[in-house]
Length: 139
Image (cartoon, rainbow, N blue to C red; front, side, top):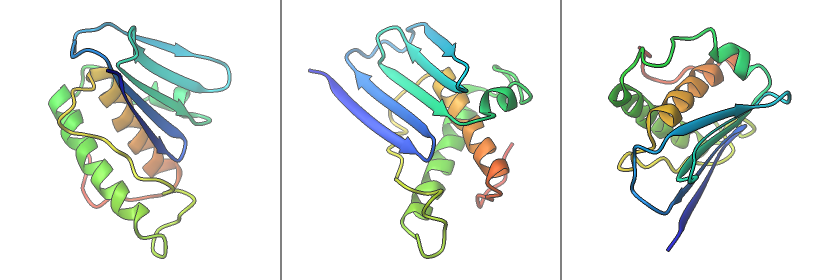
């Protein structure tokens, strides 16, 4: 049975289609000229799609892959998602054009290093570009 999950963050989408629990599947990255970044494993078990002008060039100026360990990224993404989802539920207080839809990030699922790395960096980019400040400090 194939389970699919669709998550949308303003200009970020994560697709999760779990057919197996093989966490060691090789990831591949593809980019194109429209500044779309897609990260997926070969069986599309988990995928992150970022469509945001300027993100690709911005992320190359950030800490390189491997700087943070996967546990750090998972913990930080859990905090970001929690805060983001709380803001979605408060449209009178937070811009509903920025916080359109909740993110269904399950901390019990192993998304892999690359997905967590890009999600974490997208949150940093989101904070900087849209002048948002989440309630915890970043590392």
